[in-house]
Amino acid sequence: MAAFFPVRQTLSAVRSMATSAAGRRNIKNPVVAIAGVTGAVGQEFLSCLEARKFPVSNLKLLASSRSVGKKYSFRGKEYVVEEMTEKSFDGVDIALFSAGGAQSKKYAPAAVKSGCVVVDNSSAFRMDPTVPLVVPEINPQATFKHQGIIANPNCSTIIMAVAVYPLHKAGTVQRLVIATYQAASGAGAVAMEELKTQAREWLENKPLTQSVFGRQYIFNLFSHNSKIDVATGYNEEETKLLKETHKIFETKDIKITGTCVRVPVLRAHCEAINIQLKNALSEKQVRDILAKAPGVTVLDDRANNKHPEPILASGKDNVLVGRIRQDWSQPAGHGYDIFVSGDQLLKGAALNAVQIAELLVAK
Image (tube, rainbow, N blue to C red; front, side):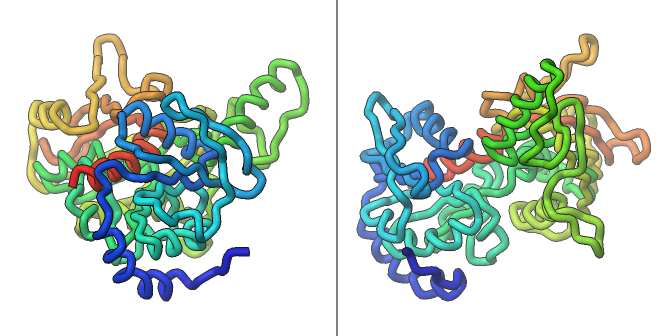
């Protein structure tokens, strides 16, 4: 059984060794490992790498012992899932992790020690001051400050930040009030399957399977299922919005509050965002900024009530932005409301990680 090493101690001990090993490698055509390949995000890693023609010289598919022997096709070749161990990363240049925080803490240091660069989708390293937290449309330069690990932000943070950051650059955001409407995919493939199962059971008038959330999910919504701090009343998802945004934007001056809700949608999150700006922007300026922003597609047809929807965002790389309007409660030009939708499995997870890997290869 693989040994467990304290994260801080291990990362500190292996960083110089990892930097030296990685420096000897040419990662223009990297060997890539996917840790947690059988999960919803792991499957999207495969799809993104193939769709974006990422230069993979060889591929390793890693998961728990339960999944050993499963086969997946990539670019016409069949690959077999191996059990993830500390030795799995020998000869690997880039590892895309989406196996959960505990597995990341256990195996990412071993990957770094082998000279591999880890792009981790869990929350394990996001707030470590030595680990870059990267959204390529916002802070691509942070990628190259890595010491072996680069963290992918939380899905709701990414989707919000891609839309808000261009306005922050132009008008300096002072405050954000965010309400999220988060899809089943954020809780994994099992949650997506339970939503489908409950839909069938509802139609057949059968008792509803409630093994994931412990409640009816179909035709219902509820406070996000992350742990609530009993002292503050904020849950972990809401806290991530605050802390991660401050780190990505490189400022703690933005006041942020949020309410995160789980909704019966398969794979795309929506967010209602109220923005307070220090410097006034006209509505035309806001629209022009968003229209030119990387990773954003404006969908804002007031006359026909066509705006971002989960079904429209699903399968799309860009974050959809609409309902763009001035906030009447704030001085003219200083407040705006927008509504956004983004694919949680793509830009909210796998796509963002693959874009980070593309930066590494391009460098």
